[in-house]
Length: 223
Image 1 (tube, rainbow, N blue to C red):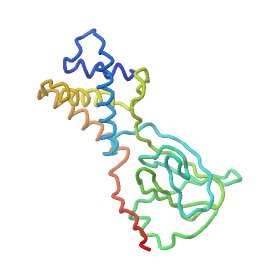
Image 2: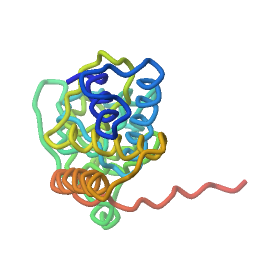
Image 3: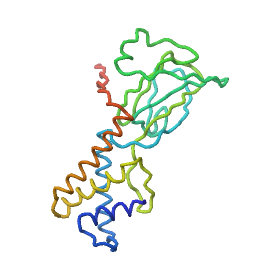
Image 4: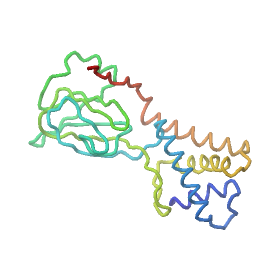
């Protein structure tokens, strides 16, 4: 399914576009804007995810590393880091434990150095996150496997490749959003379809991601 097909289905679902007819360019533009609004809202709720992504970044012995666009690790900010390993310069590889905020706070010495790391803590910050390793390797590389957020719609011809349940959830959430915009009646059936579809992906994400940690803001030094 491509973006235009999804938008057309959403518009037909509320009767804006009759069956077998194609939406006008302005209708598709309105629907794409509404779809991107939904994706942005879901991103804030840590709902959208993509398949597991494997990436490798060089290590320098820093106390911590930022991750995100134009950061120490320049990539799309992860929603969740599922697995991590340090790969030494000689090629040896050692997986590490992904610590929760409580587990990281309980560590007595967070300044130790070593060839490999035993613990990784990711704060999940926005718009860029921060990663701490313990012990801190001065060389080698960090191999991350993580889940990323869904990207917004750009072109009508772009293919939508989502986990099971997402296309249905997007379709009915978009129909609900567009019904309000076009002044169409929001029937109990439409409201229930949109709610049930979203609940299904909430359950999927909780099964994969767990409940997100609450991250306290970093204190700002006062001169």
